[in-house]
Length: 373
Image (tube, rainbow, N blue to C red; front, side):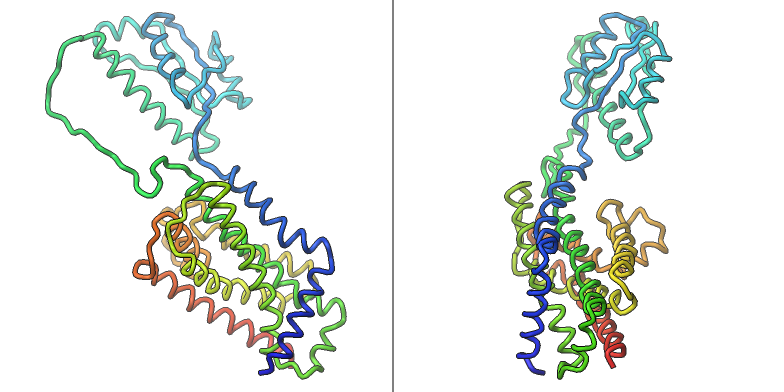
């Protein structure tokens, strides 16, 4: 193999890639914009639940219940209605997230020491957000019940109980950004390498330079190496930049080894670059390559565990996720970021990335070699 020929091809690729100003923005500016958008938008933290109240009781007890919600940092009483139709209209128009209906007999029932029902209407169009809101409602009601019990029966009640001392490791405040932002790094690397590699060879065909490259002394594997090295370098630069943004902008703790993360990224690039090369061999135009790349991106994203837990998927779909390199790279990123463990724990993910990357990249090269002959 002649490294001189490979070097000149790499040089040509960089010149061709950066001669267009739009490519510079696409390669370096877009990842930062996407990082900021995803980092702030993809968030499951509940911080502002809009509540409407329909209080038929209008007693001290009902006001205490309303104050329990208003006094929290999560619930905000934004509307007070006088009938059920108004509350239904607010829910339909998505002006509120939760409606609270307190009946006329709320206070008398409580004073008798009986259970008083309170109706909560929760907007369930987003089921995951609704379930979290319901959990917060139950928490506020538990606190209200304890306070009312102590007020109605001000006696010292001593009895055995379980005192839970809960500590959340690796993410004490349960910030969803700690979970999502490391995953965004993997998504950005995957999208960039898919698209750039897919159109790299197509560009040679459309510009009419492929025939010139074929008649040069370049061997097939030298051509592949020269074509992929620029995108490996660009991907690693983007990785360092977005990880820096994750650590210093979003303040995500990084407890692991940069060397292990670098190794995982290189193994992950084997798969993504291989798929990009495969796309280039089955596409005739840049438009076809872009559409085919997005055809791969969506299943990879959905089957990676980035948003939806793999354990919740049907068993047959779970088996398909084993063919997804993004699944293993996400585990490595999140564990290295938050737990700081090494190869003794992550070796199965590294092994899977190595096998998948080698098979995919070798398959793409063999297919391209046939097209080059």
